[in-house]
Amino acid sequence: MRHIPNALCILRMLLVVPIAWLLGIGEYGLTLWVFAFAGLTDGLDGFLAKRCGWRSELGKILDPLADKILLVSVFIILAVLDIVPVWLAATAVLRDVTITAGAITYNALYGDPQGNPTFISKINTLCQILYLLLAVAAKAGEWTPDTALLVLGALVFVTTVVSGIDYVLTYTRKAIEASRRKRGLA
Image 1 (cartoon, rainbow, N blue to C red):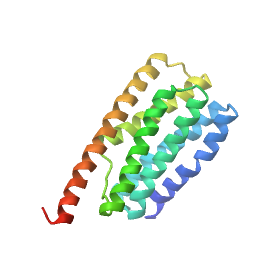
Image 2: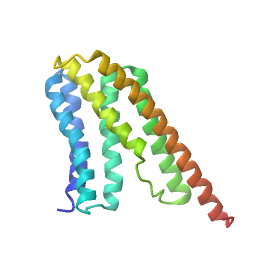
Image 3: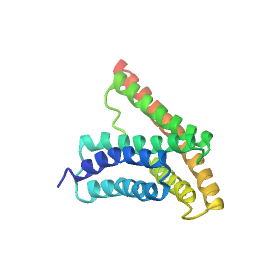
Image 4: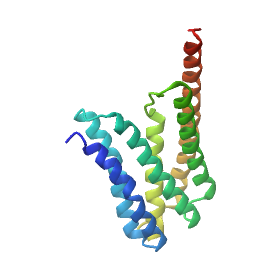
């Protein structure tokens, strides 16, 4: 049972393939349901890991990786299909590339960054999932949320930028502290 959160993360990564395929063939209604299910697995895996004590070192890697693979892929595909603005997709992708590059660099220089998602990062992930769901819903003709899409898009942009800056500042501080410890200055 304790492996269920990790299995959900792997399932979320695997769902990127049918989501990409469905978007590619213009099946927006079905995409909406598959993507919504993938988004629900994000909340469910975290809930189960915390509530049932099923946290693991593997889960600490899989959960953010699954989020990044899902959200970056969907942002890129929807930008290519001209469903979401390229500048917003680029902002989301740049944030994740920056965070990933920073984590790899920190790990290479100082070891495990012991990173946990920040509150603003969790809000950002939720906003991105909701925004992408609304964008697909609008394309599917399920709902035309022009104002809601605009407001949520602005919220995605702000939380993406703030979250990215928060990660950079947090891990820059951690790197300075780790560097001082390494040199025996702390």
